[in-house]
Length: 240
Image 1 (cartoon, rainbow, N blue to C red):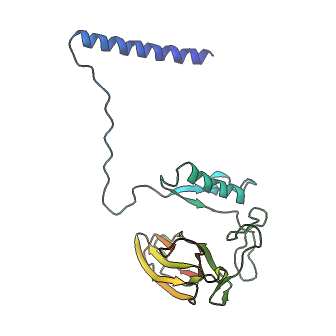
Image 2: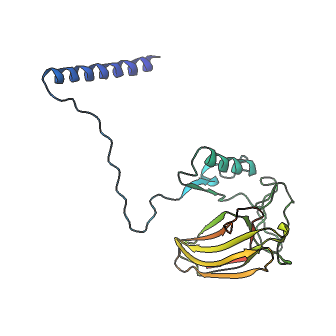
Image 3: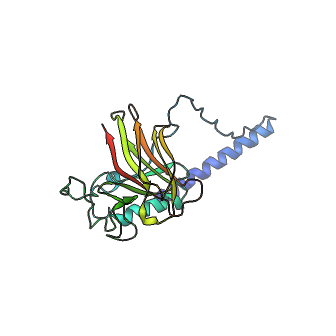
């Protein structure tokens, strides 16, 4: 209580002094200065981003503590949308470490921790409910399955050369689905498939990403809405 009383007294004194100064200026026929908004900082058209990459990184927040799990990650993403942070530029929910088991599988692939992520990393709604990536009747062991609109970014730091993949609409969507696959290097579109439908087999896509700091894998909805737009980056490879 003592500290609160002292702060309140000082604030009252400042207000009294301010009011007295304004009265004296008016009595002397002088204009009272008014507050003005700070000027907007200028921006440079030099090709650099105006803001840094903004988002959430689990290592900075939780390290490998037990609270880092699937529910927490989904909750962070929901907060970004609900609180307007996504619109302000907070785009990333980065799983830095601790999401996978210590040992890889027989094919050398990372395996999501079934305790922390019971739904897997690329699941639908529950553990084990996802199907193998399948395009045009061909089943692929590896790849990345997404739903338009989708952007997946990898920081390559200028150290990679090529990206390759076989892409298409996943067979689980029946006759539905129209998408376009694009590969971006920083702010430049390096490759695009054009419009693909579920009736088409997987199409190869490749891009030269030499010197790129960030490589983006983009899937759009083909201009007709996102219904059934399950896009697969089958056997996607980034060569560095």
